[in-house]
Length: 230
Image 1 (cartoon, helix red, strand yellow):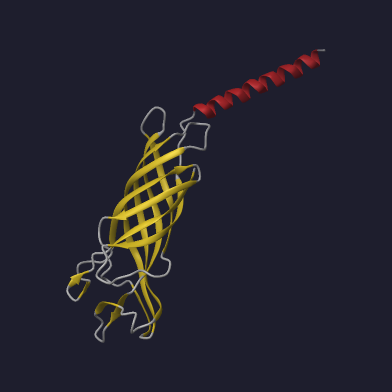
Image 2 (spheres, rainbow, N blue to C red):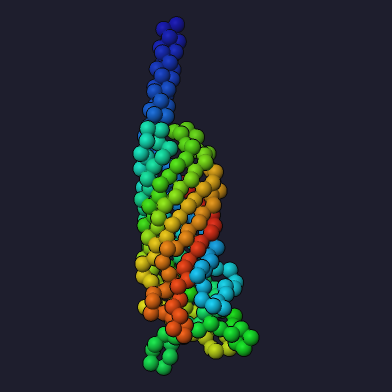
């Protein structure tokens, strides 16, 4: 009989300990969405006359954001992070070096010149800063979110590629790309699926890049999906 009482006591104490642990978990200072990954379709805005995109221009994005709740319910937070972004833009802007190494820009006349590839690509280190609102709580991992913010990026590598009637050529890290790029972001959705938008506030190219004296003021617009995990 005493053995049974001891066994019941051990089970009961274990149960109380488990409940206490559960309470600690529920009451813990939880955070959300500290890792992100996404894919976007990349557009060009403020295009020069006759510039057109062709093919499918993709972007891939990933990184870590430090989630810092600022209210008691922890459903409002500030996020600051570090990430990586790779982007390509397929279009009909010809970027070519002359005999003395100067970069020249022109719009390809597709009626006279055919090509199978013409694009520029960029790789960036980014710092996202977000204001985060969500309907989360300590035990529910499915919730609505709206994250708005600002993203700064540094272009550490870039390439331009052309293949067509004029030959095949590739250039790396041309100086006319703006090294620092920045823009506004918004991400909204429920659970796994979140729509994402980035709108650049400065041009892709510096003021030194021009077509017949017209500066190339086009900026990047990225639309796609963003995924978050703890």
